[in-house]
Image 1 (tube, one colour):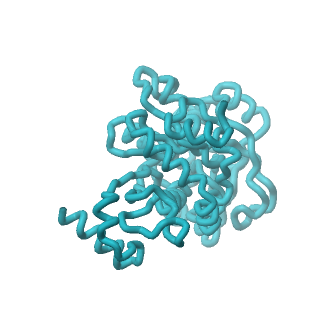
Image 2: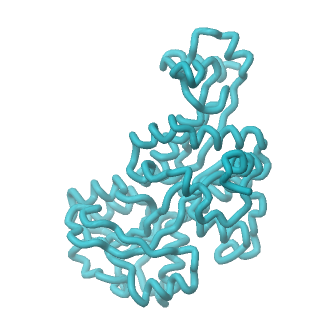
Amino acid sequence: MASRRNALAFLAAAGLLAPLASRSRAQGMRFFRIGTGATGGSYYPIGALIAAAISAPPGSRSCDLGGPCGVPGLIASAVATPGSVANVMAIQNGRLESGFVQGDITAQAYRGLGAWTGRTVPGLRAIANLYPETVHLIARRDAGIHELADLRGKRVSLDEPGSGTLADAEMILAAVGMAPGMLQLRNLSLGPATQAMTAGDLDAFFFVGGHPADTIVELASRTAIEVVPIEGATTARIIAEYPFFTTTVLPVDTYAGQELPVPTLSVGAQWLTSAQQPEDLIHDLTVALWNPATAALLQTGPRRGRSIQRATALDGISIPLHPGAARYYKENNMLP
């Protein structure tokens, strides 16, 4: 009870609660966590915005009176995690109610493919596809890395265990015949990787996420970097083996010093939950996600958040929708 009183006191001080305590008691309070990624990536700030959008703390004014347009009585929060793989495992084990997961990791985990062989996660359910995530291969400009083959013998970070970036980097390198022993491997998350590169202790790193990534923007402002292309026959080999990848291009000047468009790969970022979550709750979350007020809120955040559109909510979904989400899409004529 003390934690509940403290939470309500905080929300009241923040001006989020109406003065009617009776509404608070009537509505109750529920908590809902969204596993994101490292704080320096794109998942975390977008997760924080979505958490704010779907929340409507006990005692809040109604949406039509200027209050939050989320789920009544719900307090959602974004939780920093290592990334997609860790989020799948946390959803499976009940440590998180939901999480953001790359589309390729989603497919593999649900079907028991790739790194998930022998440990399927059949209880995964989708809420929505959010936006495409871009594979970044960032190198120090003086490291002499201009294509994947140039990584041989270099100090390269594939990201930390549990991240979708690590899983994707391993798949990409395997598809081009680059064995782990050919590299001086590191397992650093995005922030520590950029710090190591600035210090001259790292030659290159992979990152999979929305662009521009703020942490890489900051890196490029103080260190000369090269955005390494993944293209041509290399791309064809990778997609032939891993068809959930698609081609994309990082536009000119995505990062300082990038004078040309850079071809690379992308995968979808998806919001997943467990089949055990209540249907009504996930339905109401989906309603809140696609409320016009949420779209307006997302316009204030990272550029990737601005590309989250209801029209692409079902793109690339390769696992069953949660029944609550499916009910929303049927109600809105997006599903038969």
